[in-house]
Amino acid sequence: METLTEKPWFQHYPKEIPTSIDYEVATLQSYLKRAAERYPNKEALHFMGKEMTYQEVYEEALKLANQLKSLGVKQGDRVAIMLANTPQAVISYYGALLAGAIVVQTNPLYVEREIEHQMNDSGAKVMICLDLVYPRVASVKEKTPLEHIIVTGIKDYLPFPKNMIYPFIQKKNTGIKVELEYSDRLHSFVDIVNKGKAEEIPLDIDPKEDLALLQYTGGTTGPAKGVMLTHYNLVVNTQQCEEWMYEMVPGEEIIIAALPFFHVYGMTTVMNLGIRMGFKMIIIPKFDPKGILKAIEKHKATLYPGAPTMYIGLLNHPDIKKHDLSSIKACISGSAPLPVEVQTKFEEATNGSLVEGYGLTETSPVAVSNLIWGQRKQGSIGLPWPDTDVAILSAETGEEAQPNEVGEIIIKGPQVMKGYWNRPEATQASFRGEWFLSGDMGYMDDEGFFYIVDRKKDMIIAGGFNIYPREVEEILYEHEDVQEACVIGVPDPYRGETVKAFIVPKEGRTITEENLDDYARKHLAAYKVPKFYEFREELPKTMVGKILRRVLVEEEKKKAQKD
Image (spheres, rainbow, N blue to C red):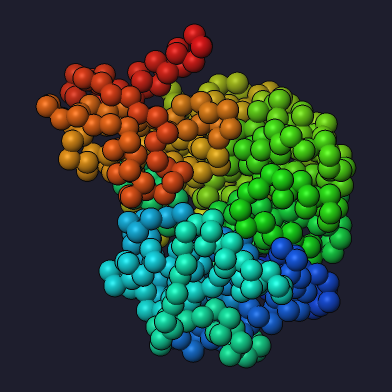
């Protein structure tokens, strides 16, 4: 199975999409430098009224890079970024790369335990974070290799008078007012950038070998793993995206940047693609259907990559018909299965095409997508991208499956990761030769279209976030009154799936939903906290005592059918 001899999907490619691409062997940060040269005075970022040109973004990224260097960051060191979508997130990402560092994207929703694990595992020396999350970072700093923390706030890149008013709004909405005393280890983002020099730092980077990113992804066993993505992996996937969306005009498109940049999907299909193509990015820090409807109409946005919950949120907003969305040309949906009904209604509400794609963090992330302008099949995730081989591995034979035979989806291509950070055994277990084993079950039809039958056996995908039951279970098991816990995903009309926990209390102990909810929220990011709890005297098990998760899943399916 070293190479697929027949690739039936090529017959469906429009003439505009090449089957193979001549990729740039370049660093990711070269995109920003080139955009500043081509479009110096063009608006790159729009953020709540604040506008920045490509030249301004590049200069601020260079200033940050030089200041990171002065803090001791050397080529290959890791810099963690824990920011919502803001101009600072773009500046920090490219600034770290311009300093020769490896970016470690960190979800701002993470709690202390998760931050501590990621910092220790990655060995990050510097963290750039929002003021709202600083208390969490500060509480674990001494248990990690972090040497410096650079703090910024939403207000820092707002125009006057919004920058004066916002702190009061933030305190009212969150109840948090962060007051900082800066030191030689704690820095103001604005001060750091203002002190920096807009000079390029000489680097010796091999794009095919050297890492640009450690993107953490959960595992069904053990803690989150750092996916090693090289500059070339990310450059390749961005170019593939450009070719797939061939009707886009460089320097002309306007893209809604609501997908989180800290997620590899938003990073590639919004930020990196936007910078490469010289697009204007309308940055949305938090998903807000009303705000996005207004932004599409006001800015005449042409592209809106998202997750199914984002499209559902817009479609269900009572004001959707009051807004002109006809400027939208194209949307690629990812992170979770896209319901056909959502696709149809969204296309009716706009002038554009909404199609589903498929990929993983380990594939930078996109490997397969439906054609935006061309043939597509209902329920299919589409066709492999250029230079990407996808096959189905038969569970029975261990060889390539026949068309329409269900098996494991395996992927080979230049966007596939280098491996897992400091986990050679996990890396080896995830590959068969050059083929990456996705763990997802699916099939290919006679014409080369691929379909997902089931996501990774136990993984829950809620609102585009991957949730691994074992991680949630381990926290529940730490509760002093819990004897057994099993977590599954159950259908949710908005998030796609949500988390349900089955609990067996210890004998003689009484636990309430409120008690467990309070406990879980102290130890897990909010999106991982179970929404439902069911208390039982016992859970279904095998003869050797292993809890039968699938039995619980089937029970929930039967309940849903009755309802």
